[in-house]
Length: 268
Image (cartoon, rainbow, N blue to C red; front, side, top):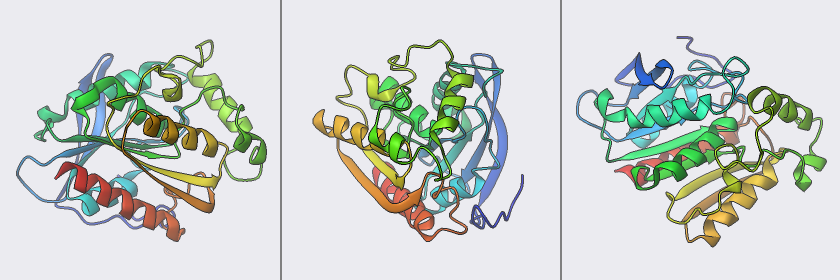
């Protein structure tokens, strides 16, 4: 485990952090369990990292998960799901669903579960929340990928280049993860689901200067129209990875703290 990466933020001290595995459809799935306090059966936040379904791991999002655990008073289960192109769609989703199902076996409370994630991981969290219904109490979505059409919104045109994540990047990621998959498949695009009524309340963080901005707004409105409670924070002037880069971006630290409070209130 790498610690103390200044770019991502100093790791918050916790009572217990350990790596283990849970059983998935293709074998063992590595997970990292963060406990803010020792003992007991705390509620669980299952976290899916970003990286376009192609990159990212338990270490890239270690600081984020530590902050969520410390700020919420909940355990966090970070999921090292299978990555493309070796493991294309729907491998990441299958592993994500399996990880949520395994919460009880990790000594956590399966009756108090939330999901969270950024970018591609945010898209996975949104789909998992819909697939599992009442089994998920809250969803925290950080600039999520919820529309695999990649290019149909105004923000894709406004921020196609020059703001860290580019439109070309998104086409490359989708090409590795979901070549030949219908972008309207609701297991790939949360926005394409026919019905989102009854899904868990959502806390959504967006960055203004991000190709994914407008699809995030559209998904928030879709949830609201279906009667789902939504709290949306849209950060002016921010780039796509700002929450990950909380070591150097104040808004990233503030967004992590807000999400942690929201998750703690939902699960305690």
